[in-house]
Amino acid sequence: MTRPAARTTVALAAVALGAAVALGGCAGGGSGDGPGGAAPSATPLGPADLPGVRVEVSQPRTDIALGRIAIQVQNGGDAPLELATAALRGDPLDAPLTWTGRPTSTIAPGRALDLRVELGGWDCAADGDAPLEVAVALADGRAAVLPASDPTRVIPGLHELGCLEQAVAAIVALRSSAVESDQAAGHPATLVLAAEPTGAAGSVRIESVRSTTLVAPFDGVSGVGVLALGVELGADGPSEMRIPLVPNRCDPHALAEDKVGTRIPLDVTVTAADGTETSGRIVLSADDAMRTALHGFYASFCALGP
Image 1 (cartoon, one colour):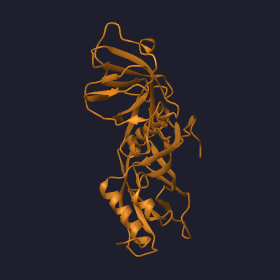
Image 2: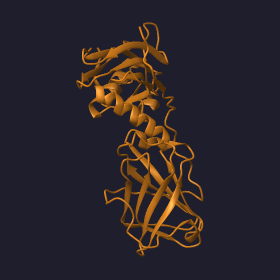
Image 3: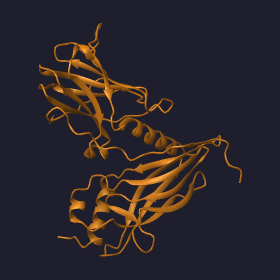
Image 4: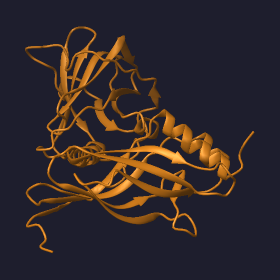
């Protein structure tokens, strides 16, 4: 078989966890749905006007499943910093990610505040490593634009993941749809993935499925870290995939504290209409019903009932 002329390989690392709070800890953060960007100003302040104030992007573990990131504002200055709004901007984002105060939030000297914002869409024609900045409106009416560092490369990783997910979704809508289990202790379950083609040209090959912090694909003998699938999805189907699962380990604490264990990683190769291939890893999110079903299977398999 003739191979496509072009091939782009996406090496997507796991989304990094949030960085530890500097400068003496983190005060409680808030989120909002206010308009994008800080209040207009003819002469916005810059880093030199706010000495000691630094901005950093992170994604705490608890925010991964919620689709949020944190804009951490660190106040290393001598005076309190009172924020009204803040908006993360940069070429990888298709729109600013905006936070608003309640109505304002104050960061004391030597403290930091995590401003939680909901993720939006991505500009997949842009460089995921392009610089980031935060436009800030202060409570006194002044505006500032500050560079935002991203030491754990949260935005490049999410940009790469999001653009690969968009490429998959253009060809086939893929989701975790059911968990089939007889609820007996020690019996594997079957995870059903539904695949609905959009009618667009191209194909999505599901190369393999990977384990999570909670469950692992079952190879007929035991749970494994990676299970090869080699399923080609496109206009001609198939309409579903069936993946045997077992718990990664029987640990009631792992179940009670689970945050991302029901999100299923898949290694995929997307072939566009022009023959270009893009390979990488996507993660299928789980709705409340799917989380409940997977948690219930885990508890039944491990005999963790009340």
